[in-house]
Image (cartoon, rainbow, N blue to C red; front, side, top):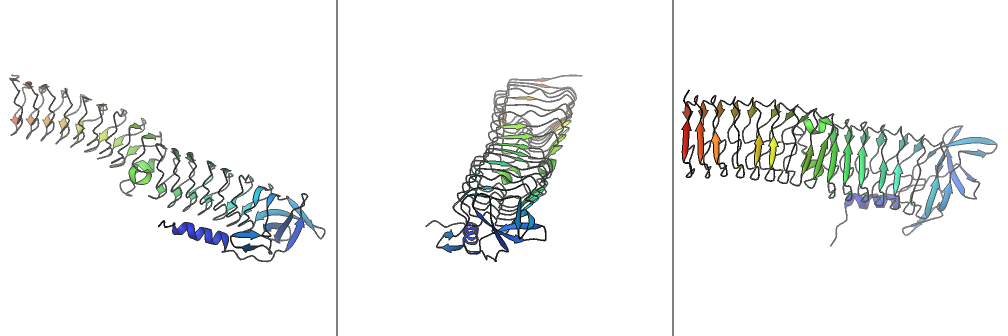
Length: 457
């Protein structure tokens, strides 16, 4: 038995039956023969309201607005002229036969539930002067296909476009600062979305089940994004992130990229406002194949790309001066990488388990290669250890079974425990003149090693 989402059931209930219709103050026939009902806001302003005689016959609202409705800018009643400035609560709620509506530029407020369940309304142009749109305003407008939210709106309230499943184009202005819960829930047909720089917060389930969303751009202002905001966006494959906070502070907030957007994302593009990549930021993004890192980034945290099993290539800009432990561990498809010139040490397990890594370029200033840095890099055929290297720590190159020749530079003093253990195809080893310590198990399972040359100072 299929169980319906409780949120959806509640929404349908209130759209259909949760309406108390108060008496309207005046009714006036417009120039096209349609009777429009109004409440008086003050001595100069009116809001459009529902016909008090409308009622439900089963699921259908009768005696309601239908067809094409044009709201005038002003109304004269008893020799008094009023300006129409608002669409009131529930004004068109449940008007299933409404196909088109024109709103005047005098409208500044669209209140809650105003067009809820207008399921034959295909489009609406929201006037540029509108400064507030209430919750559920367009809830379940299932034929609505595009919407441009006017500049001046600061909050997209909860459930505003809930279950508008034909909505394919959304324009969010750079005045919006927050997008509340369920705002675009189950808007299946949105394919591209840009969150402007002004948005600071996106609440839970805001874009959940936008299953055709493929391209997403996130502005630089976003600091709060719920784990469920983009859940079940199963076709989301390309994301551009301009928010430094989102990338540089994800570990402390336990909001990693895979938790926020899913593991299906293939391409991340980081904007020039991003300064650092936090530890574990892209960990477990198993379908990630491309990552663009700008030259504004200065650090990559521990395990930042750990377990990105489909990542084949990555270009790290020379502005990066710090790369944490296990940063690329388990990137089984990574084939080649150039470490930036400012890196002085290769951290623990940085490339461990990168079984397809064939080439690595290390900068000359590297002084230490730490524990397990290249452990299990079984496809690595050559490695040029930098001349400034002093220490090669435990198991640094363990299991690099395709290495055939290794030259230890003259400044190396310590080759620690098992550093080259399991290098089963190692044939030639040249050891520099300053080596003082070679740990146990260093050439364990290196049965093909034929020549060991020690350089004498």
